[in-house]
Amino acid sequence: MKDKIIKVIIADDHALIREGIKQILELENDIVVIGQASNGEEAFTMATELDPDIILLDINMPKLNGIETLRKFKDMGITSKVIILTIHEDKEYILKTLKLGANGYMLKDSNADSLIKGIRDVAKGEKYIQPSVADLVSRSSNYDEYFNISIDKINSLTKREYEVLILIAEG
Image: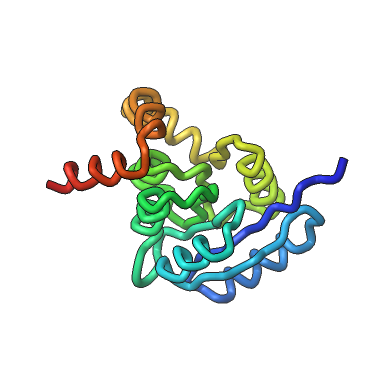
């Protein structure tokens, strides 16, 4: 059985990082980079136009940062899976992005094999959190609060119900 081709968008404000990741990924037979975005607005536009399977999303970007972009993806019903690929090893960033619906979290110091494994795992519907980051998250006293209580309830909301919930939360 032939593997499904995994379509990827790379969203990072550094062209050299995007090109390097693209070259690594295109060595794989089952992964193709279909777009590169230098900011969150471009990432959102590409996600709506190209319908990628996976979006590699940096946190620090101009116009819309990665967290705002991830929130916009979820608010607007983008179904692409998102892997945060960043330099930030901060517990709050990790928990916040996972709570917002990121499917993976990796640091830019990961090796190429880890990146490829993460993409393939997330494409199969699994979560992928870099092991060193997973240790940090699992030690968090808020882990259960963030993940076990309301994710299923949030995922069961219609798009409109979710929009109303966001507006209520914003006051």
